[in-house]
Image 1 (cartoon, rainbow, N blue to C red):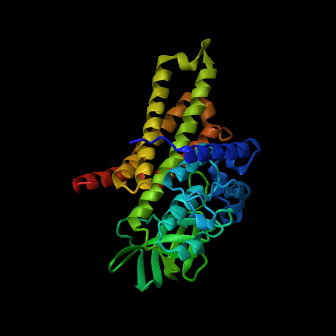
Image 2: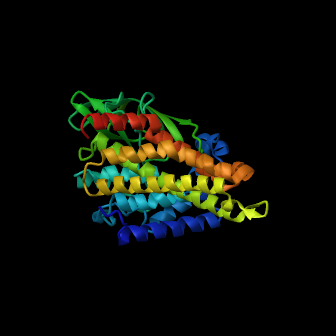
Image 3: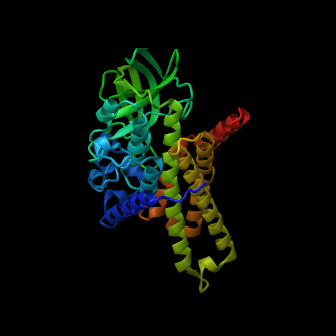
Length: 376
């Protein structure tokens, strides 16, 4: 197995770093402060939650069209190129709907075999004019195989009813993908956020990025994603979340490594103390393992192999070791690590939200154990 990025993925990663890095240096909202203030702004503060200028700049750079089919002006690439961009989004903690729109939306829609449906849902994505998201979490379970949300269908039309929580960027989305149960199994339905029967209530997140509780009451179904199962949607969403987490942890590691290299105590750099070296080594091991696990999951998804186990491993590692590694970074920074004007708290807050997206460490370990008990 060769997880080395190809030329396209390397170029995508480099361009994303260039665009996002320039935005941070220019004082873009991509480098905004703590989530506590943003989270209290409700819908009126959506402009502070979503840096539209940066989002459109990513579109102009061609980074939002990587996974789109050629007939929609895309490059026809897939999970790995998208993950390369999402990793850089995590590295800069950018306040843009990249995870929701690309991993929760574009990648699942692209799996649909219907060219007209792709055109309907994906038009405007390349230019940064259309945002997609998915309502994958429910009050009782982060990603239920049999959703409590139900769809009443007559052919390819019908309605969907239920409650979804933690739906990212729901108020800004043009389309929301909704896993739902039917008499014959689970389906992925697509609804409009302003359709009848939809109630969208802003809820708080650690990072301040917008999340919503979505209540659906006989909401009309626009279409079904017949080429993408509920399991496919969950795997793509979890892999994309791990890619963002990969960037978050890598950035926190770089920040902390540079700090302990420069900060002196008793006339010596902190990095020369054995206890400090051991702790930063643990963070490095966690970051590299998450990186490898995420690459493996994305590679399997890209190549059409069974990816469930690898996705579960990556998500477990993110949830179990990501927060602990961030706590170590805070500890090594001392008081500076708690300064909300310093980048580290932003990474920690985003990591907390990512862990919630994948369902936490215990939930992922249970999922992985059930998969292994069932023979893979």
